[in-house]
Image 1 (cartoon, rainbow, N blue to C red):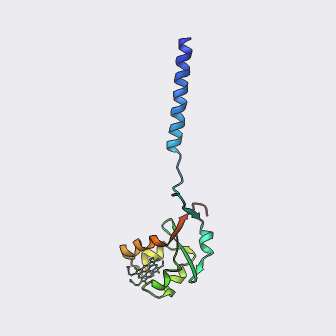
Image 2: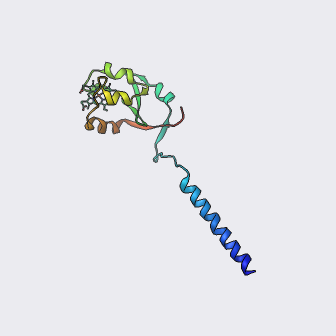
Length: 118
Ligand code: HEM
């Protein structure tokens, strides 16, 4: 009898251990509270200067209100609206990255994160 109780005790705690290990190893979705996921197809629906979204380094931004404030003319930004635009940010179209201040100012325009689905 004692053996059975001991075996049940071991079985119980090893299943708890297995469940905990599974939980720890399962990748969790990194959506913060209130954060929305968008696909590249969603972003593609906002491809004009009047409605300009971009996906940059896994985040999705609505830069429509920023475009008039951008130091360079809108025509340099326009081709990147509705697209994955990390290259636009890191090259400015001529091979030079934006300043750290420029990267930091993007936060105010974030609307969500890019989903891993196409
Ligand atoms: C993704 C498409 C974009 C392109 C192709 C682009 C291109 C350019 C160009 C040609 C200049 C002027 C030349 C220069 O300063 O070297 C410039 C400057 C600047 N851009 Fe953009 N830009 C883009 C997006 C953005 C975004 C999304 C922001 C911020 C929300 C931004 C912020 C700035 C700032 C602050 C400057 C002044 C220089 C600096 O801090 O690097 N740009 N950009």
